[in-house]
Image 1 (cartoon, rainbow, N blue to C red):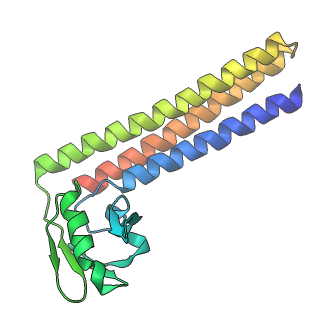
Image 2: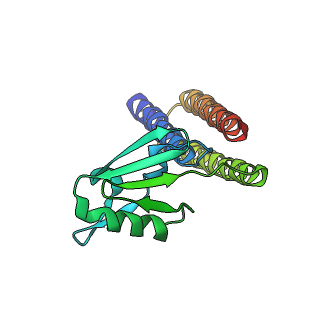
Image 3: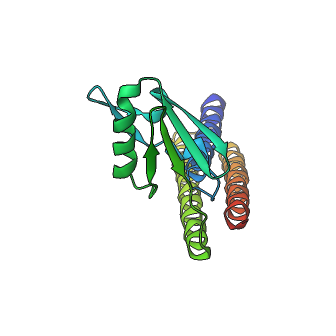
Length: 187
């Protein structure tokens, strides 16, 4: 029974780590006024009939803090990159030339910054909900082991460890949120 308890504990730890990583990735997609190639991670370009991430068909660089430059590996897909940006929800106006596509990132207004903070809070809450869901699933599995004859003390100890891990990961999500808030609100 102890191996099963350890299995559930390690499974919980691994799942919570993945959830934290996912939350971190989602937070990095929230743009904070500075140009970042990560802003285009969700952008798909029609590459010979296949929706392909822009990072797989072009180099994305930041020549300065307010500009992204997309240099496709094939010149004939510049128009497709422009089309994908215009059709996306990025709200950016692409400017193309013979070399590639330039995106100027406009400075954010105070209202837009507040909206982005709300978005970050929503994302962090979703991360916390995922972590709590993992805790719930693991605790249910541990209770099933109790019904199957596991020692009650072992189950109680395991539940305490799961709670400790949950608290730890929720605190890490809170740290991510506070860093993102500072990043967004810094002009």
